[in-house]
Amino acid sequence: MDRHIPLSPAVRRVVTVSGLLAFALTWTADLILLSRSPDPFGSPTTWLPLLVTGPLTVLAVLDTPWSPSLDRRVAVVVTLSLALTLWSLIEPRGLTWWGALETTGLLILAIRTTARPGRPATAAAWTIAICVDVLLLPLRARAWSTFVAGGYTLTVALAVCVTIGCAVRALEARRERTAREVRQAERLALARDLHDLIAHHMTDIIVQANAALTIHTVAPDKVEPILRTIARSGGETLESMRRLVRVLREDNHTALRPGDLLTELGDLVSAHSATAHDEGAARLEATAAARTARLSPEVEVSVHRVVQEALTNIRRHAPGTRTVVHLDAEPAWLRVTVTNTPPARAFAAPTGGRGGFGLLGLRERVEALDGTLHAGPLPGGGWQVQATLPLVAPPPSAP
Image (cartoon, rainbow, N blue to C red; front, side, top):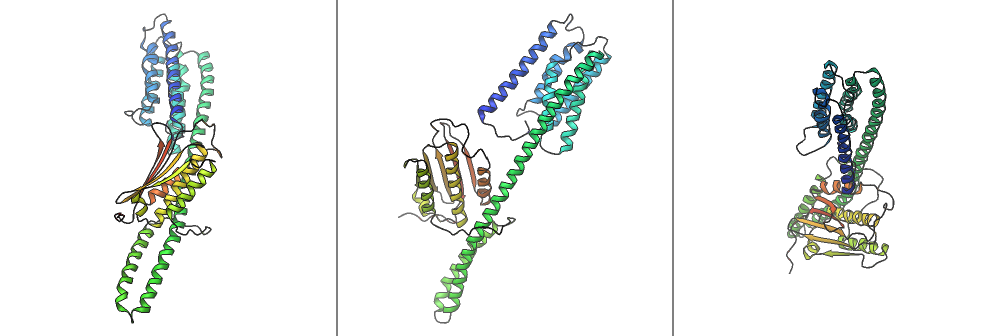
């Protein structure tokens, strides 16, 4: 389906298997009706809906790596189906049944074209074409009673399918709108953090410049180190300012002051363990390279946000599991990983409901700093969130 409704792999497998089973049973019923016909292969219009257009419609519904675009598939299926309907009107022998498999496939395509994202005019045009094709299917029987009864039944079925498609389209539109709002909110939060941290840098530059003005007459040899410090701080400030391009800022916010990252992470881990009523529920690990790495203030704030969001998700989705927060540093990157073990029992729904947008906001923040974020299940069970963020400079060598 051309949508991004979040479904677990198990649910996707169930949906796929159920759909294929439904198509198989429908095709079996068609073949049984064909075998009971007095002359199954006497006219091509008798077996074409069951052996050609029906399977082609099912293939158009399925998504495979080698499948063409949905527009092309719908165009081919609708054209072949309409051509077969016109041929049935010309053929001397009329059909007693127009094909349940083809009808089912066209109804599913109606849902897909209605629910597909993109321009509403394109979706409406393809949906109308499919509806016209479906409503003309009873003409193959060339009987007024069959056309009236079949047309009524198919009209109700099309109404249900179009309604489902519109509901899915509205759900996807709401999800996209919420995703945009989450991204915008994360950009605003990042802008606020950077604003306060850059103000801290600028204050240091102003203090250094005033000190240079004060001592340049009495101690000129002390001015050059001060100027170098100002140049370095200015470069770091400009690098942070580069990340503020096209990011808006709100007025109502609480100032954020830089602190010790490992201390703050330790407080988060301790609070998580206290909430779980188990002192061993979570632990913080940091390599020597991570402890001596030089981080920009915005990276420190982002690492704090990643760990905070990951621990919050663990408390909501997998309470009572063992959690490890691991920090490691390479010459140019800092990697923070939050891993939890599988929960002892399955929970029907997380506390507070299912949002699904926390990781989206984190990804927006991390990518704004030229980093990467990956989150997903582990092979042996459990969950892992890993963020990679750039370092300001290579960490000094440990003694």
